[in-house]
Each structure stands twice: as structure tokens, then as C-alpha cells.
Image (cartoon, rainbow, N blue to C red):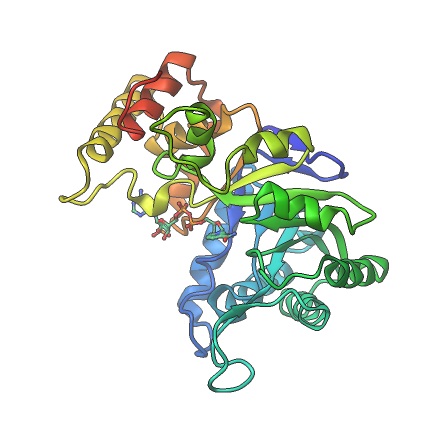
Length: 324
Ligand SMILES: NC(=O)c1ccc[n+]([C@@H]2O[C@H](COP(=O)([O-])OP(=O)(O)OC[C@H]3O[C@@H](n4cnc5c(N)ncnc54)[C@H](OP(=O)(O)O)[C@@H]3O)[C@@H](O)[C@H]2O)c1
């Protein structure tokens, strides 16, 4: 799989990233089972063997078990740490922490960021994260407080680069203005079934357009050299297997994906991911399947080129409306 450098970093990454949310098993306090560790090892190995070199985590995935399981695999495969890019996130807290009646919330406080980074490093069994993202915008964010925490973990060598997730342009600017180093990633949900950030651009100044807070976000990231990552790039598989009561356009989209996969002698995953890869902002899809066949199928995306006509056919079916 081809690689490129994330702007403003020395990180050379594969076109697809592997999302580790699913490798930790259940989201409870139960320890990982032998089966889930073995499945995780198979998934990570399949990703590596098919060219993926960047792995996405969060402190909360499977209540820490995704990072723990990944740490075990890192120990097993000698030299692996130095060959891959490890990214994690902080800023979401579960309800019940620290008090039983504490609500679920976002927390960009200095203390939480520092503790979260230490927790991720410990679970992963590594000295430093390549990238740390703020998971979801915290309305109570104080940019100077985040900057203080980022500065500290950076100077101590615990984190090399910083990014955000699910942020709009204004939120990124607000934070960036307090930092002495660039925000290099914004990880957001994008797929053919969740295409608003792409659709927003062509709805500009149209009376029937729906305007969202994310208007202009992709252009903002492109202008500011911020790498866009797409989470849920295959919409949890719904894009291939729409439910019986799914809208007609969703069913038509699944059919068109199958037609292109057959015509191009490739997988359906490759068609859907290559649709993201074609966008000139340079989207890095973060695939989340734990199934080794689907990982292999996904990695074929790099070999697929969609024509402009094919790209628009998928897009207009997905948006249930032609352009203009
Ligand atoms: N920043 C954020 O707020 C945020 C939010 C969500 C996720 N993420 C990151 O993004 C990564 C990917 O997200 P995601 O897991 O939602 O993405 P996804 O790749 O769209 O979905 C993966 C899920 O869909 C299932 N799936 C995939 N292909 C399928 C198919 N052909 N048929 C049936 N089921 C299929 C997988 O099951 P199998 O495992 O059985 O294949 C898995 O449960 C996560 O691992 C995480 O790292 C970030």
C-alpha cells in the first residue's frame, strides 16, 4: 500500500489506518478473553501484512482493553513498535467516574489529559504516542489549559504530534491559537452514508440546502494542512447490507457498489474506500473491521481508481439527488 507523509510531521503513513476500537472485546470491566486476544492478534497481523502502518486507539476503547491487547501484541512481535505509528485519543469520560453518580462527559482539563496519556502509555507498554487526538469537542475547553498539558507531554517525550477529532474549523482555530506547534489531524465521520462534509460544499447558497456546523470543514483542513481521517468509513457494514426497511437510495447504493466491484474485479470494501481516497483533501479512512478477510478486502482500495463519473454516480445515489 502506498504511503505519504502527514503534513507538518515526519510520519510516513499508509493510505488506510487501522482502527482498534473493536479489538478489545466487550466494553465492561471483564478482562480480555484468550479468544479476543487471539482475534486481535489475527486482525493486527492482517493489517500489517497488507501494508497498514498506522493504528488508531482511544483511552476508552473497550474500557482500556483495546490498548491493553495491542500492548500484548507489541510485546509478542519483536521490533514492531519502531515500524508503526500509534495514535490515541483522550477527553471522553464514562458515567460513574470517579463517583457513582458522575455523568458521562467530555474533559479537556489539564489533569485529565495528563492522566489519560499516562494511562494509554502504560496499557500499550510504550514510552511515547506518535499522535494524540482530543476525542470530541468539550464545550468547557480552555485552550490555554489544553496547551499546558500538550506542552508538558511533548517536552517529556510522551507525545510527538497532536490532533483533534470531530472538531469544526472554529474550534480548531481556537485551540491552534494557543499552541506553538500545529494541529496535524482532524478525525471525523465520513462515508457514502454520512457524506455531509462533502455535500455541504455543493449546497452553498442553495435555498434548499441544509447547513451544518461543519460547513467548509474539509476546505478548512485542506487550507490549513490538516490531515483528515474518516471514522466509520463503511458505516458499520450497513453500506453493503442495508436493512429491509432501509431507504431506496441506500439499497440502490449497495447495488451500485456491487456492480463496480464486479466490473473492476475487486472487493466492495475497496470501492467504498476508494471513493473516500479520491477526494482531494486526502482522506485517510480508519477501517474498523476485525474480520481478516474484510481487512484484506479493504486494503485493495489503494489499487482502485474511480473515474469522475463513477465517483459522482455513487455520490448522487447516496445523496438521493442529482447535481446540480
Ligand atoms: N473519533 C471518533 O469519534 C470515532 C468514532 C468511532 C470510531 N472511531 C475510530 O474509527 C475506527 C473505525 O470505525 P468503525 O469501526 O465504526 O468503522 P467501520 O469500518 O465503518 O465499521 C466497522 C464495523 O462494521 C462491521 N462491518 C464492516 N464491514 C462489514 C460487512 N461487510 N458486513 C458486516 N459488518 C461489517 C465490523 O464488523 P466485523 O468486525 O465483524 O467485520 C465492525 O463492527 C474505529 O475502530 C475507531 O478507531 C473514531
